[in-house]
Length: 337
View (cartoon, rainbow, N blue to C red):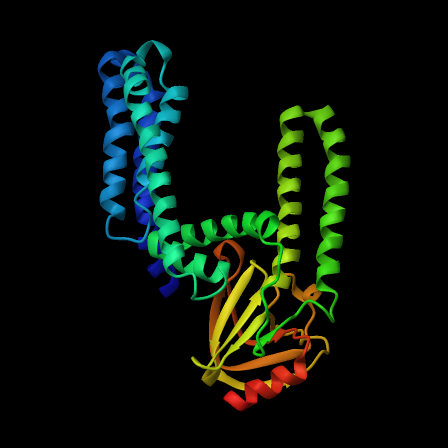
């Protein structure tokens, strides 16, 4: 009951504008509108494009919801009016499309360019504070709210590891790979190959049935294949690390996820490659689950929460991980406990 009470305020910023929009749509569909179309068409246009976005802004101004979503509510209103408002009563709407919409487009372009420049400057100033993904994740969170920042980090990292990063950095003694003894790269490469083959086969079938749908599925499949290709490379470039200075264990799984665990939170470290318990008391750190393999289990003193790809939340009190040099890793962790 408490969870429902807590979550209710979170949906208010979306519920109130939605109810307002639905009531306006009902008016548009009513006989009352047809009788007073000249007056109501302008009033409803102003409600959709000015009043609803303004009320939405007032509702989110002190919340973590990105303020740019006010623009999204405006665009949604523009689309709804274009379809729902009779064409003979769209004179005010046409003026907005002709004179105001280009200004919004220019504003969006300027906003994107400004944040790209800002992001680039922040990245250069913090370049020595971790690898590409770690620094990028930190920098984007300083510029954007948490969820959009994670999405942007994931998308930029995909491009970076797929097309730009080709050479491994020199590995330090406290860095540990996790892709060699379990054949992880081969498994991911196999997935990528299967997706590519299926994409070609599906494209020829689906485009004959529906051209647009066929191309949408083809694009999504090709994008998924690119994600796995970038993952296969990034697991090589992003090893686990034991941070002696800060007393942390930095776990990574390519650009899909990373987690920093303070060593003092570790209750015990178990060398174990057996099947995990069915009660799910142990969680795979790998987003691929059992396909990522495991040969060690970290038991923690308390449950932790961490983010996976695109900010998807995961929780665990015991984590199953894979380390190629498990003996050295085990010894190094114990030395730091």
